Image 1 (cartoon, rainbow, N blue to C red):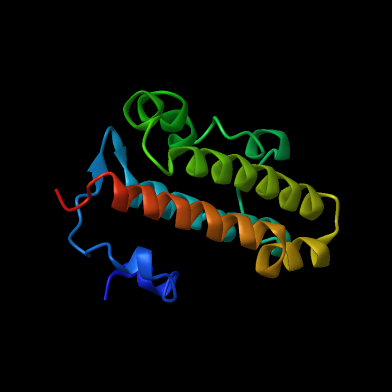
Image 2: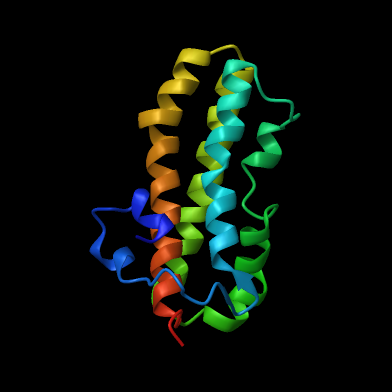
Length: 147
């Protein structure tokens, strides 16, 4: 079973991606980008429960142009895949994800730990995280991971 099936077991389109799929396409390592966005939950959880050691700024976290994926989407990815069906969905989902992550972080830093935890596990952040991952997986599949 591919590692991503743990997260997307009910998504038939995502299950079409083979475990030995080519990870780097068009200047982006899709697997690494997915893993980095999945790790945001742990990073935010660390702020919420006090176990984290990172100093995170909600204004920076909310920006979609600070991470590797965001930089790729606005540069090499745009040049290479702008006309590819699904590219704009990744951009939109990624932008929304970072806005939600920034909001969840702000809640945690403002002492609204319960609200932040709810957002992380079942709120806007949780939905945005799933959606950006799903859209990125679809783009990965569509741009020729098996080639």
